Image 1 (cartoon, helix red, strand yellow):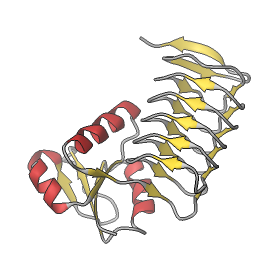
Image 2 (cartoon, one colour):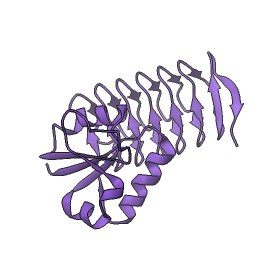
Image 3 (cartoon, rainbow, N blue to C red):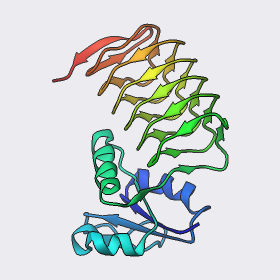
Length: 208
């Protein structure tokens, strides 16, 4: 229990709130969007109107509720480096093995399953109904979208986005900064900085 500051008042903020309100005495949102009035009546502050000193004084933990992987990770690490504790929030209806490791700044949503010896990095999103099997490794800033599933010993590189309903076979390695398109079936390794899609998945685009 304690005082949580959630950065972001969009859709990601809503689902993070749904997890977080079960664990914290007080929750406040922070945004740089002057048109935002917060979520569900919780108080909102504006980033340019508060100092880091006040944030450190008034809140015990912080979580970045932004869908963009690079931005979420960057902001999370910046606040951590300045002395703010990153929250790790796991929905009570998620199933997480005692031997799994969940990094700070990560959120695990309802009905997700994380099995033994899996390792999840910092500032990740493990979305609704995701299955992460034994011995998988997800690096920092990864987003696994709803109902995606991966077999054992899968590696997912930093800032990669695995979209809705993907299936990833055992022992696959997926690179950094890639996107796995919705519904894709991954049966071979995926390099850095690509978009893959289809059944089975093929490279559709290369990123700079």
